Image (cartoon, rainbow, N blue to C red; front, side, top):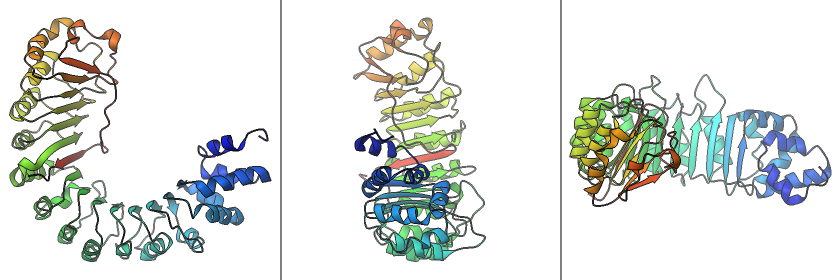
Length: 405
C-alpha cells in the first residue's frame, strides 16, 4: 500500500463507500492525508446507514470528515439519517450543497423539527428528495428550491400546501406513495398556485376532480407522470378532452393493458410524435388504428413486449404511419422474429417511404451477422445502440406536453 502514488489513491477512494474511507484513515498517517485530500475536493457524497454508524462510532473521524468535505460537497445522499446524528453537524456549513437526497429514520408521528434542522444545515438547496415524517412545515424556508420530491412522507399535511406553493418557485414536484392509501384531498389543488411548475410525478387517484384540468391550464406545465392502479383510463380521457393537441409524447410502462378507451383517447391526440410501450400488451388492431390516425408520429418504441404483432403486421403498421422515423424493438425476443418468408412486404413498404426508417434492435438476440438479407435496404437503418428513455418503475404513465400551442 505504501507504493501506491497519490493520484492512484484518489481514484481508488472514489470507488469506496464512506465506511471503507473511514477505516483507511486508521491505517497510517500518509493514507489518512490522502483521504483528507479526497474529502476536501469531493463533490458528490453518499452516507448509507452503515456509513453513518461508522462515523458515529468514531467522533474524531466524523468531525475530520465534515470539516474537510463541508466546503466542497455539492450533492449529498443520506440513508436512515437521524436527528441525533444531524445535530452533531450543526457546527459546519455547506455553502456549495445544492442537491440533497435524504431518507430519515421512521417516526411514529410527524417530526417537523427534522425539517427545520435540515433547512438550517443545508440552506442553499435547489433540489430536494425527501422521505421523512414532515408535515410540510418549514419546506418553504428553502427559497432557492426548484425541485421538490416528497416520497413516502405519510404525515404530509396539505394545509401547508398554500404556503409552500405560494413561496417556492418550483419547476419539478413529486408527491408519491406508490398507490398507498393516502388521500391528499382538495388542498392538492394548491399545487397550481406555483405557476412556474413544469413537471409533476404523483399517484393517479390524487389527479381526480378539478386538479388535472387545473394542471393542464398552467402556463409552463409540460410533463405529467403518474403511478396508476385504477384511474389511467379516466385520466387519459380527461387529457384527450381538455388538451389533446398539446400532447407530444406518451409512455406506458405496464399500464396500457389493451384498453379501447385509452386507444380512443390516444387517437384524439393527433399531434403525438412519440409513443412508448414497455412491458405492456396492446392488440395489433388497436396499435394499427393508433398509428393510422397519428399523422405526426415519429417514434414508436415497443420495449420488452410480451406479445409483439407478427412481422407482417408490424410492417403494415409502419406503412400506416409514413412520418415514422424510429421503430424501437429493444429488449424484445427477436432471434427468430424476422424470418425471411415473413418479411416479403417489407421492400414495398420501404420503397414508398420519403425518408429512411431506423430500426433499433438493442438487446434482442440479433446482431449484424444474424440479420436477414431483406433487412438490408437503403431506406432502413439498423441500430444496436441503446436508446435512453426516462422510464419510471412499472405501472406508470408519462405524458409530455408542448407549450407552443
